Image (tube, rainbow, N blue to C red):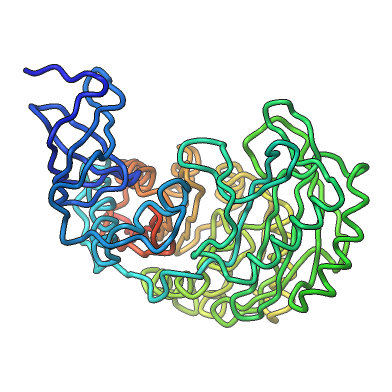
Length: 454
């Protein structure tokens, strides 16, 4: 077998795409991962890193382009870590994401569910209702944009095609103020500076905008009171401006302390016909219209009746459960973040829903409490974070013996693992359906129906 070395140049055909968006090719039995390629590309590939059983490469020349390849319409897509699929057709992207899901369930979960048709997104640009822009120091000037792929180096660019155009206008206005007033950007190496992130949220239907400025110290951030006033004078849709304090040496964007400079720290939007209150710390799907399609299909999977009790684990602000509350006798929601529970309770009152209870706590811990107090839901909805469910949560979900478990996951690999565990605990993985809530990125949402085995 020929041994590959760094800087070797080989001819390589790309035959697959990995979950992280890299193209996959094989050379004399060695797997080689290459970014920014399409299935069917034949390339001249430079080897840039050699591992024991695989290599990383980069494109030196494109010998024969794939039929899936298109010209990127973003000037920084090669450098930014956001869009991994802007160089291929959207049809090819959907096929790749559908394959990601199937591979995970068959390879990791050893499962053979029915796969329903993948649900692509009508709008592949300007769909995000949330954006987080890191701020960095560049020789004494504050800059912001997006992290370069696999790094914390900020690519200075604000006109992202995934975000509403007004976000770019707001960020540029903020950065002009920051530099005019010599406000120091945070340096995560020196652990110095004031402004760490600019975090924006916008109601897809209401148009209301929240500006959240993440700073290292509230006491040093008084100058942002003036900025808050200027922002609301310039942009009529800004309903609240909030400071968030995060002084820790961490990759986590938000701290736990909030201070509203304008408004009450929340905005409202509509989701599945319900009015929803949203705070900086509460989870809310970034693609509102596509999330509504996902939730309607989840309700179909749930097979609810007027006598049903529905348990909504990892409920966030309650959007999923509340979209189904009028179809059931009782709704119980569980979420570990208190601010999200506060939002959920506001949402219940605002929408006149009287059959819902929301509990703050870890899913596994609360599931145990609910089991011990005799709760036996007919259906459980679970929408965990990327790490998936822990074993105690899955065990108590099964112990409560619902007829159906409907799982919504932003990580198909952990979802496949969790469904395999639920299989051991008496549940059959029946149906799986992919939903693209994040066009042009590698992320994809998965909807799963599990039913109790006889």
